[in-house]
Length: 439
Image 1: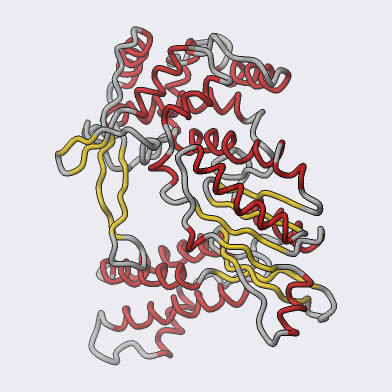
Image 2 (image 1 turned 60 degrees about the vertical axis):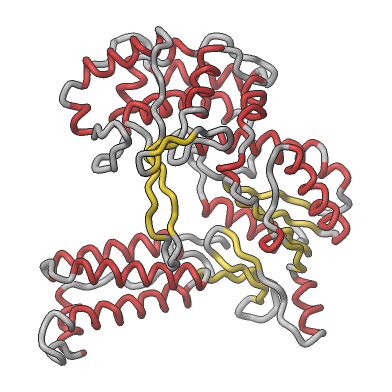
């Protein structure tokens, strides 16, 4: 059981306060926080029924002798005897594609250690990160980034957007450079040594070990935070403290993890950013994907100019939505329109069909309950201002697929539309609704 000493949360709050008060402070004594209490909390935060890493140890198995296991882990950590295990890599089908997507699965104790280190680092770096960084941060999410982007375009005179994509970001982080960035704030050598061990732990795929000389541990609990730290120094601070000082009009950098867009009033600023941003990333071992990086006219005047040319204004994709220029219902005010990215919806419907194919022998009540939960989850993310048509279309397609697959469970033609409507009355599905309002 956790001790009765000062709680882990209180200790982390004191560190956060110190980091906030002194932005130049380098913390020399942090590793003592990697205690039984901290790892105990981290263990209960782990999700159950997750795949096991190369240790083949599940959360349930570790829990059987939890106190002894955590005590032993803490002892090894403080003797510097703990060695992170390679990440188990498996390939799973990529939604909406014939390609495979690599998935990293760390060992259970590695998840615990990474989670503990993440909490310590987060207490410090949350005081440093800029306001317009939204990915993998507490009390921030995609909708917050989308809301800020919407307000910047509609209310602050944006006329140009730079849409950028970093090629293979998580696989190409320069580990040595990352360690230098961490040293700006962390002077505790044991913290730094364990982070380096985690970075160098390697990958095991189909029984073959491969060293990891670049990138962050795939699937690792600590990877999103390390990614934020890397981009904080390579892009965020560079833009906030350097680039924007030379801009002549409105500018705003909105980032979610390695996905970001930048708003500008002046075309020259947008073009200069496109060039200097690429040069900046190259300095730190990163490169953009040219086919996914572009400057577009976007805003009130962009829509007018496109209409004069007999064209539609350009669009851009960000966080699952295609953004386009439109006007309010009255036709008097410019608005940012949003719709779910078509390819993603096609992929989601394909996955839904595959799930139904595999689950069609389950009781009808279970199938309908799961479908209802899937729809609620879809609305929770995609149910945002301006996206009514897309979520209505998704609801219609889900019902169509459901009707077709339930009809295959009996004789051809045994499930009529009349019977299907009665089924929906007995097991009602949630109707589409706007959950998040940006206006």
